Length: 244
Image (tube, rainbow, N blue to C red):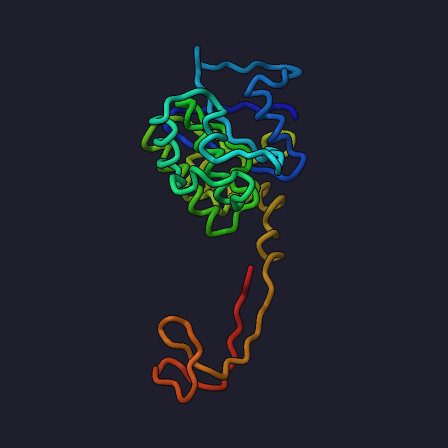
């Protein structure tokens, strides 16, 4: 990785995108002080508090560990701080649940709650939507944006997919061992270098599904027998849908 320069600001979200091997994780390790750069320098505000959400973390399946206890292990805080952190991430109802039993989306919110206990001025998230379904990803990105607005911290977020984070980021940096392009989401999504790296990905994820529709549904989506009661429905017609 070379010729990479960026600036993080309070109250702003900077999203770094790029293919596997682009240097995204290396960039995070350098910013966290876990790896020294071969050249250049990292300047951090004095006594900067950083909250970190890793891409993944290994937990022994046999360890008796509740969500509340796991969050508390990050740094000793009083019970009120822990309760507030769980509430802000929408997982209060999971506080006594075994950490190993959580879904991907629930676990990512637990990691976010743990990071919030640091009362961060900078929040760094490495692929925060890893293992989360599309709906859950959108909700998670909205939650991160809302927390940023509430607390005023800066956010550095690593992602593979610009389309899912476009509405919840201020600046985008496209990385592939160097900065390919940067700017606002709309500008980056139409940049030739971005299109070269990612332009054909959405189409590859689509499949055509043809459904012989010979029945009707009620307002709850249940199949009903007999003739259709709604004028917008007609029997024996084909529907073609695209599913990602």
